[in-house]
Image (cartoon, rainbow, N blue to C red):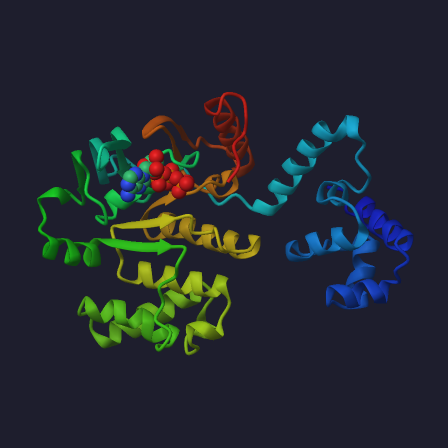
Length: 358
Ligand SMILES: Nc1ncnc2c1ncn2[C@@H]1O[C@H](COP(=O)(O)OP(=O)(O)OP(=O)(O)O)[C@@H](O)[C@H]1O
């Protein structure tokens, strides 16, 4: 990305739209100095400002990042080039470290798992003959078009829904053998949930919400405080621990829910479209958190996502189609952007040459 070229393009488009630096700054709610820095190529607009800036300058995001207009005949080639560069810079430093140690035990084992819904005379096979293992410390994504069975599969692993065939083992326990009562405590002991609805209790502060999860597990008070302080610092929510959920942003709530999910040190963290409600900066923070948790804490994360960019943070992706695992991709010793490209290619192949979007 050529920052100087982008800067000159911003300046030219601003003038063509009859705006002074101050007027543009005011519309974006930032300082004149920031605009001046962009236009001289000294800095780039924050991600959250890119779209409003494009609206004001009447250009597309691709044109902004390329620093020039894109003609119709160049649209495909140039758009891909821009996308690649943006994704590379957006993803930042590659944090992935290949796990080379010997045998890593499986936290989750699925064997020939199936789910059939019966509604009167209609019968739907949502999941069919799915088998895989997930090793401790991995971050695995499940992708697939709408209706391919991702949520059904995740809900069965989450013990929210029951499989109609096959076997699911978490931490060596076959979950079909557990009674309803046992399931509730099994969930508390072994699983952490990061779903789009944050489920934080509004009458408790963030600290109390997290502490509650630990208290239910009868963890000593001194340990509760240390755990929360430590994790809050790692997930950048120390400043808001004593606020109520309605006083903080969606991204902060999501990170609080994440701390709550992991504070109990679950064997398996289950995430269903966790970045769906987040802006790109918060989404990146949450995904970086999952990477850190799996690499530094040995947490195991299973995440359903539609989004190839989110998936590029994972170690492995399982692609579902019509209730089955169609194929899988493992991350090699490669950067996120290369993995991202391979994910896009696989998605396109599965969709018969057409990329599906969320
Ligand atoms: N409770 C239910 N009763 C009957 N059919 C269901 C039920 N839940 C899901 N299905 C069907 O099972 C199939 C898989 O649905 P599922 O929600 O798991 O897909 P998905 O990949 O998560 O989709 P999306 O990405 O849109 O959330 C679909 O055909 C869906 O209509």
